[in-house]
Figure 1 (cartoon, rainbow, N blue to C red):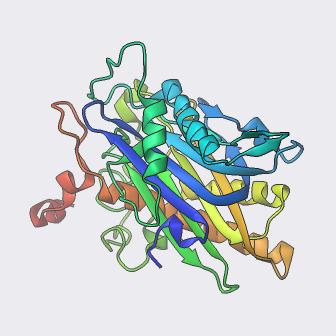
Figure 2 (cartoon, one colour):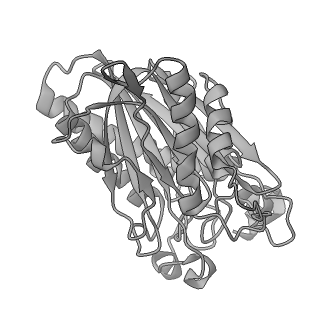
Length: 337
C-alpha cells in the first residue's frame, strides 16, 4: 500500500505543473471504464460532464476525471485528455466513433501570483494531455498538478491522497486538490482538523490541540473572501457498484471535507467529490457494506486533505502564501503554539 488513491486496482494518476503560471492539472485515469458519480455542494462550482453522471443518464462509466486550476479556463483540460484517449481507441462506442467520457472540475487559482497572461490560448488542454501521459501508480503530493496554485485561509493548499483497506477487503482511496475558503487548521495552527483520523504520522503526528480555543471555532475566511476557492476530489474503490450506489458513496465521502476544513461548501467554494468504482470485488452485504465504505471514504478524504496541506510548499512569488512548513516546521515555531 502506497497510501495513495492508486492503491485501488485500475486507477492511475498523472500531474502536469506550470511553475511560471502557478497552475496545473491532475488526471485520474481508469485503466478500464469505471462506474462514476459526483456530489457537488459548493456555491460556485466549475464542472464538466457532471450531468452525464446522473444515474438516469445513458452513460454509466467514465474513462478519466480531470482536476484543474484555472477556474473556468481549466475545464479545457478534459479536451486534451479526450483527444489523447480517443487516439488510443478509448471511449463510448457510437457506431464506429469513440467518445471518451472525461468529467472534470476546476478550482480558482487566478490570483495566486503566477503569470496568467497566456493570451488567446490558455494552457489547460496541453496540460491535460501532459498529465494523462504522466499517469502511473506513483505521483507527488503538495504543490503539483491541480494543487500547484492552491491556497486556504491559513496556509498553502495542495494535492493530497490517502487510502485504506476495509475489513471486507475492499480498498478505498482519495485524491484532493485543497483550495478552500476555509482553513484545515484549528485557529492559528499548527494542529490539523483531520487529526483524529491520521494514520502512521502521515501529516506530522501532532494530534489534537490540548485545548480548542474559542477563536478556533469561528470561521477563518481566505483573503477576507476576496478570492474564490474550491476543493475538488476523487474517491475511488474496487467494489462492484451501481450508479446509484456510487452516488451514495460520493455523498458520504463529501463529509470528509467537513471533517478537515472549516468552513466548507460556502458560496465562494465550488466543492465537489467524484467517485469511481473499478468493479473488482462485489459487496457481500450491499447495504451495510456500502455504509461502511462511505464512512471510510469520508475519513480517507479528510486524511488526504491534511496530507496535501502538509506536503505543500510556498510558490516562488513575492506575494505567495506561506506553507504549513514555513509557519510551523521549526522547533521554535512549534513551541509558540
